[in-house]
Length: 336
Image (tube, rainbow, N blue to C red; front, side, top):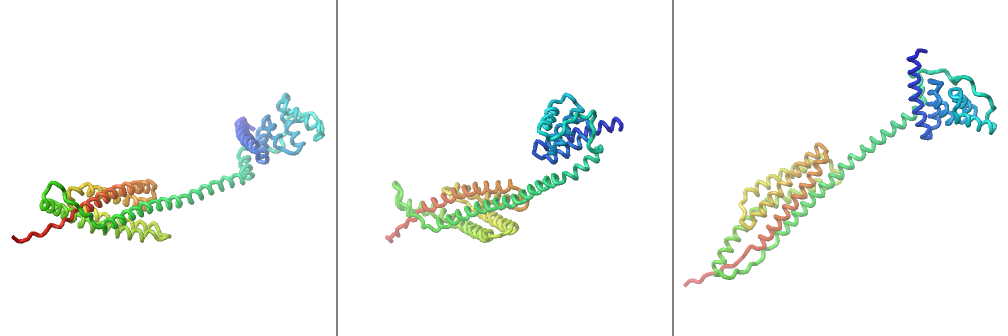
């Protein structure tokens, strides 16, 4: 055998020895025995390979053979001597001197043959690794639809809160306005004229505002009917969200054309900001349905929450403006 082949065998033996030691420490004695046996076949003078191999075998004669091989390589190895003495004292082996030279228990295999034999004997290790990878992939495939379902549910909850908000607005709109009292320090006729002019502007604005708000409530109710049924698909939910987005866009343009009276200018601005946030949230939802990217779902939820806050503030101001509408009956003037 050439020097290059001997060096290659020693390197392969060292690699197999490391794997055998790892298997022995892991409690896999049979695997460790096979790896260590191939290591000493490739390098018969591998002292630690023979010593570790003796520790994973069960037959006393085989153990004694490995310990004598250690002493043939290194006559001063105390662990091997103590092991042989222990076996002889208990009558498990017949006392005999260590062989002058190491005799390999089997023909020497080259590196490729040893690796092929190892693959055949350790097929079950590869099978366990493959099974572990399959189980991990299966877990990921189960987690993805569950996560998407949870995100869809959270988006629907936010939209249902918006629906409840609009229903509360409808009830508030149906409430009759409060009766106002005359302001001191002004003649009754002037007070009546000022109140009537202010009330006319407020009522005209609120009446014009009621039509797009009613349309919004109907659109949200239709969205709830389309997405509230169990077993709905993502395609159907996306179509319903696109329809609602278009209807909110139309309501935004209609309200933006109105000129609010001074007391309701802040409410008007808040309402438009809330509608714009709702449009952006629905755009994010449509992106989520098409790409299934979690960041769009999270952004839609945050924008829908901000939209609810803006529209709720506007609703409170609208209700306050309606409550302050003065309805003062101007007394009829008698003919003089």
